[in-house]
Structures are given as structure tokens and as C-alpha cells.
Image (cartoon, one colour):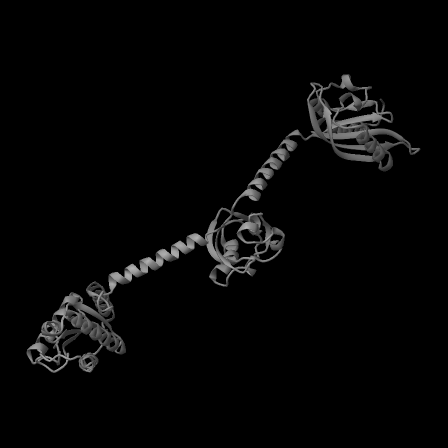
Length: 436
């Protein structure tokens, strides 16, 4: 072939492109007889050039397509000048494989079709991946649609994008009734309502979030739901597994009430209903440390019912218990009026702790306690102090020092109580703090 040098270079350039492309290439005449195939053609199909030149593509038909398929292919090719799509063909070794095929009709100067040029790729690997993905999707869909928990996809703004059929049994809704609506339409308004948007904004792709909320079911009742979710990539929302934990929540609530009751029983005196000695010791230790940190005064008032043994011997233990209860109620009321807390210290002895109380306030509280109990007018004919039940009261006030313990304040109050008894009962004595 004689051609100018630049045309030779151009021809060689095109030839190199055609021979080194990864796609198979085939050129036929108007009657589909093969005129040319490139190297990729032989690599993909297994046929050599000599084996196919002069033949037609019928040589590698797979048998998977009927005549209608080929009729539609040729109709499109003749009408539009091209056809593209997927087709199954057979390699030389008999292997049937999928191709992505593109055919163009090439016309001559008179407008008649002179050649057909076909480019194709082996898409076996892609098809295998698609098949695996389809199988996985079918497996996941089967799991989602048959799982007793609800599986849901939620957008970043809380819109339900997908809800599994389990919502029928757990919530009473058909999936179609929930899709496209915000999940917050059914959630009780509380801090959890903002948890989902915050988690989508801040959580990583592998951040697992679990939270609980109450959901209003279709019949109007409310159930506790537990949601475990993970953020979807690209901030598109989250996928969540939702289960009904109403029975668990009810059991937890009952357990909490039982524990609260037990704690209350452990901290309260069984007879009088006010704080017991254990609670008193804990509260005194806490208030002492708090006063020490704040360099603030702390007052302690000790109260003892006068001649209570004689009262029991005279009126009986049942009346004695009733007397203790009445004294405890009066004592607790007075303590609260002065910002303090009352406790049964032991037997007929009681105590009141007053944080941030000056000596004058402690003295006023102690006198109010004495007067209020005397005002109960509980008869006590053998009392050496009065004809009714009375109390002796000792009070002490101290500002805790770095190396001191609460026992120092307790000792001062005990000493004041002892003096009140020695000085005739039914009276108040205030301890004089040691010089600092």
C-alpha cells in the first residue's frame, strides 16, 4: 500500500490503539462476514483470527437467546444504526459467558451499510458480583421481613425510609402507614427526641447508639422501645433495630420501687418513721465535711425524753411506743422549720442536725423542740419534771477545724444534754465551744 508518510504514521497509531485496547473488536461486511478482529477478541473468546475470518457471529451463539432477541437486535441496528446491551455468547472451549456489546453500522458514500463494527467486554466477574449482591440482598430482606424485631432505615431528619413488617405486630401499623413520616410523631417529647439527630450529626460510621423511648401505638397505648442504630455513610441517616422492651421496663420499675423501699427501710427507724441511727451517722459525717470545706457552723441538738422508763412502767410499752411516735413527729416538724433533719438516736434519745446554724439559732430551735413536745400534753404522772411528757435538750455549735472529727461536736452536745438532766430536766443547755 502506497500512502504519504503522515498517513502511514496515523494508520500505525490507529492500529496500535485497536490492538492494545482491552475490549474485543470485530469488523464485518454488510453480510456479517468477519473481516477483522483484534488481539483482545482472541484473548476473550479463545478463537484465533484465522478461525473466525470469513465466518459470521453465529459461530459463537450460546443458545440462551431466542430468534426474537436477534430480530429485535437487527431491527434496532438497521433503524438507528446501532445496538448495545448484554448478550450471552460461547467461547471456543464451550464456556458460556456474558458480554456487554456495542454494534455500530458504518455506511458508505451512497448511504448504504458497508460494515458493522462491534466492541465488547467480558462481564463475567461483574455478573458474579451482581449475583452475590442479589443473593445477599435477598438474604437480608428475608431476615428483615421475618425478624421479630423491627428493622428500620431513618433519614437524618427522622423520616422513616424503610420499616420491616414486624411493625404490624409490635406497633399495630402497616409499613405503608409509617413510610415517609417522621418517627417523632409517635415518640413522647423528651430528651431522647433529640438523640437521633445528634447521633447522626456526631456519630462515626461505626458508632453504635442504643437508647430507649416510649412509642404511641396505633391503638393509643404506649410501649417502651429500645433502638440500637448505626449511622449510614455520607450522613444519610441511620439503620436501626427496634424491639419492644415494655415488659423489661415494667420489671425494672418494680425492681427500682422494691430497692427504694428497701433503702427506705434501711434508713428509717421502724417504730417512729424518722431517720435511724445509721442515717444519722452518715448525715452527720457528710454535714461535718461540708461545714469544714465551707468554714461554716454546724449545730447538733440531742434530745432525751425525761423519765421514759417510769412512763413505760406506768402506762405500758404500747403507750410507750405511741409516745415515741408522737415525739418523733413533733421533733421532725420542728427540725424542718429550722432547716434541719431529725433522727432517732437510740431508745428514747433523738438528735437534730442543723447546718449553717449560729448559736442563737441553735438555741431557738432547741427551745422550740422542748416547748412543742411539752405542748403535746402526753400525761406522765410520775415525771419529776412535769405532769406530762417532757424532754431535756442539749445543743452544741462548732465550726469544724482541719484535724477535728464529728465526734467532737457529738461530745459537746452530749455534755450539754447531761447538764440539762442534772439541772432539773425539761430544759435546754447550750455547750460552750472550746477556745480556738
